Image (tube, rainbow, N blue to C red; front, side, top):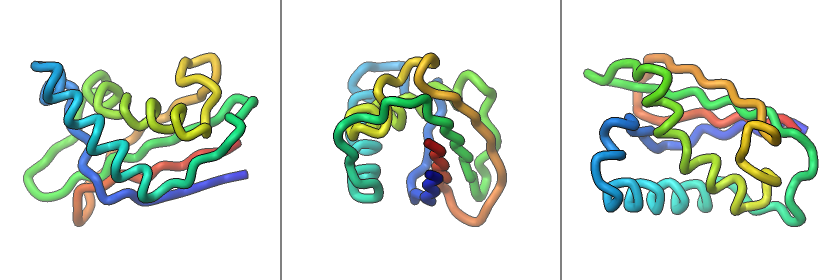
Length: 115
């Protein structure tokens, strides 16, 4: 089964959110709130390895992040998918992750899951 969603939320750089734990906690709450609106929970949790591709779309004067900052900014997305039952665990043993970035007309990201 394949699932694709375009979520109107700007993924932040790891450098921007790891300076203080309060900044990360607020960012994580925002991610959970928007993801809960866009994606329904699934119970019981998925028992198979899930392939997930995240495409960050940046607009205006924004530019591409380096790989480490992109993966750090995507961490709350995987935390939400685990909490919502789409992943048994967010470790690499249960997920195959793929990241990409491209310029677009507005800041958002595309989430693709294949189970």
